[in-house]
Length: 606
Image (cartoon, rainbow, N blue to C red; front, side):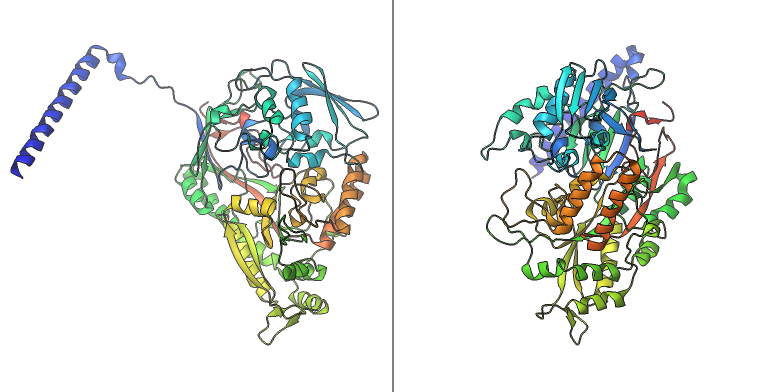
């Protein structure tokens, strides 16, 4: 044992002496070259943000989530501004609309390039629309906002020359400019990178494009046209964006945008943890993709000066939040019903849905959970939209009334046992599972209160917050759910929500039809009122007179509130906390993303 120790000790001394000699030599060399003592590294301007979940895809055509990486990385022909909602030029510098409103010619900016330096031309625009978005074999929700007229025809997109494309529509289509506008519209895709994936088919006969640019793709392979490109992705931790050196925008002084070199997007699955990170100066912004939780507002407002940040109030947020039941009566390809037939009968009973709406105390949610910083919501259209119908204008509302709820249930054949538990007419206990995304503390608190509220009318709710990506898969693919609570982005144009409200839309979750690329389903049928909404959305796009359009979408709102495919809850006030050094914000409650002008944002010392 003594020998082993002494031998180890001798080796330790040799290593130590070697390191010391090496260090002395380095110091002697540096002493002769003083300049080498200084670092040559240039500080990189870096904005640190957070979101709750990892992305599900790097392919903008396949996106079904918000927030998403495409806010940073891709642009379309037009863009909706976040202050007024006006449509402004983006990749297209201008457009001309024919007198009969059936032809729109877009002219691209000169010398546009992709992030790999290749030219962005009219070929990319035609490829994006004709080969991807309007391809029947590509499952993209973006189709829904481009369906025109009773026949659900699509526009034809043709190349005129390297910089000009024309959109030919079979009839005047009022929403066209907004339907293609980012951040929610069509992002232009690189033909030279993706064309082969459209032509090549997988073993199921689907274009390989459907599996292209998944999140396991090397970020350097994602070619973009927006202000930032992907630099690296570490699942469960962060995604790093790097300034796109070929981005086209410049500021008033001619400086190329964006102004910030790098963005770190951290995945923090809990809003309380996000708050701690922000207060510890680890994050530069909080509330950019979803308004701050109301209980954070008073805390952060007190800390503004000491914490060197500002809390911005953008007014009512444009998104919506709702609870929805699975109304599907369809079956999977093995002939198994997506929803337990017993529960399906409850969910498809209008009196049941209306009773649930009356039983939810939304005012208590507003006061206790939102701390009064919010708005009780009744409409599927954003309050900022000129097409919004208010309760004062005759929109039906469901103010808290548990007695009315019980009356509706009893009249519909439900009954109570001696323990006050609600049973259906066949004696089955009324019980269902309510899902929402875990980590969103407001929704978790709302789910807990809704569970209590419905318990007061005898309904047993099993509330289960789950991972957002798991929830998204359940409601969009497997259809394995009973009731869920989520939010949906809003805006000026009602037709931008066609993917949610039209019966074959990709986000029509409460009665989801088979989507491209999915396994067959059996027995799916739209309800009569769903078909009426389809009709209203069709004529709403044909009508160019704003007053007449308002009447059409007013009727749509009345149907939604009468039939209650979704039960609207409480909406946020747009609140966002930002470090004082972050400048250039143009914040309001209209856009879904508080940093919608990300390319103009800079640091105070820039």
